[in-house]
Image (tube, rainbow, N blue to C red; front, top):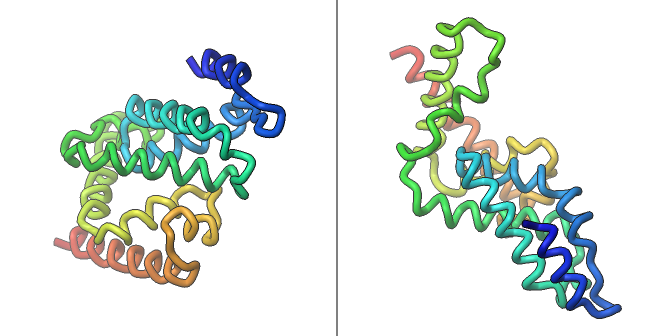
Length: 182
């Protein structure tokens, strides 16, 4: 489907605004998928977000030369699209297989089940975090993003992002410790 967009994009480009959509897809689609999947926890929804992000590239093709950091721009688009979709999905509608997919397949079934239940408990506690803390925690899970990039994506200062991340991790650790001892 993206290939068809590439042809349409090539046909409408001017010499000063050329962009290689195929190269962008190849370079950034995996990262955009991880970003959207971390928010949505649903493979199909995350794939839709990635496609929508590249549709945005086509829609904004004439202004792309003005984009200073394509990677941050694309991540911010995918992040915002995923958050928009997320608002329409209740947490209990999240893909139940997501937690199980994070647990190794080489483990015995009872261990996989226990670990998946623990992951679900972590996700429930993440859902209870204040919005900004939850968002920065999800972004920080993407090891490819530096603090400065997270700040750009969230529209906050670097020190603000570091403070949010510290509070989110502390609050989550406290809640999980309370839950584990209860």
